[in-house]
Image (cartoon, rainbow, N blue to C red; front, side, top):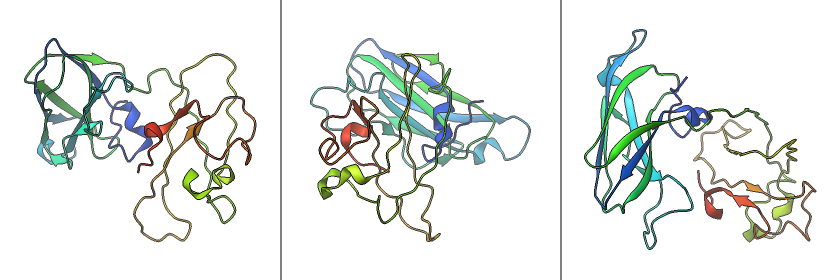
Length: 219
């Protein structure tokens, strides 16, 4: 299963991944094209496609590079898309092709004008999935640390029986009132110890082991 859809969906981690190795600095152009559907349905030229490019290791972003990672090909386009990445240093880069709609079974061709592409296991390979639903209400909608009551946000305890790698993903599917609205900017933080955060220990993110997007709220 590799049709994870766009990053709006939890299943995005199921998409194919490729390693782009650049032996020297370059400005590669990546091109993605649909070549055939499995099981019929829409024509390949009607399938909405997108590309994302980022450093293989999130902590190894190019020094002095102010671009927001991952780089993306823009709006999903029917049949194919193109991503031009200017002035990349030599190194290892992660490429993720995706369809807009999860579950779309479609063949594709991925080409790079520079470097060498190699297939990788998808991001969710070997993970045990667990989904928890919650909500922000009048008591727990405390917002970011800037508002002075961060510890009042919902808290969950994660118990690990052995060392592990974690992938945490937070999304807000809609408002309780059912109104259409812009998606809220979100953040998830992981703290050591498992004890509930209080006003003394949970006013901010400085004690967190890990924070999504480096502490920036994103949607």
